[in-house]
Each structure stands twice: as structure tokens, then as C-alpha cells.
Length: 77
Figure 1 (spheres, rainbow, N blue to C red):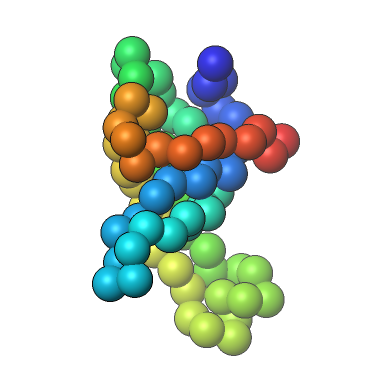
Figure 2: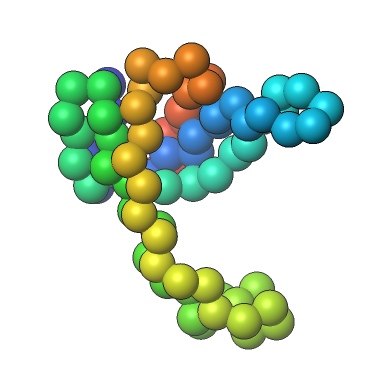
């Protein structure tokens, strides 16, 4: 279902004081192990947003697509 090297917009449920809410973020899939996705976002130092707000750091995450907090993913590129 997920392709290594492709960018997806992920929707996960986040617990807040007001209950559950949806959080959207874009990540690139770097590896797939069963239901686990190894995701990456490179550092941003050159975009107009980074120049206004400061550079962002590189981020990595493992997302379990079997989790009840995983909602959906949409291919971006």
C-alpha cells in the first residue's frame, strides 16, 4: 500500500483536553516493516517560511498503521 520514497499526507488522531482531533502532516516513507512505516522530513532552511520563522530540524518517526490513532494517508507526489 505504501511505496518507499513517496510522500504522503498522514491524518492521525490526537488526544487533547477537548477530546480527539485530527492532525495532518506530510512525510516521506523511507522503509516499511509490516504495519510500521519509517518516515522522514528533511530539515528546511531555504523556504520562505524557514526564512521568516527560522530553520526547522530534520525529523524521523515510526508510525504504526495498525494503531487506532492512525486515520488515513493520501499520496502527495
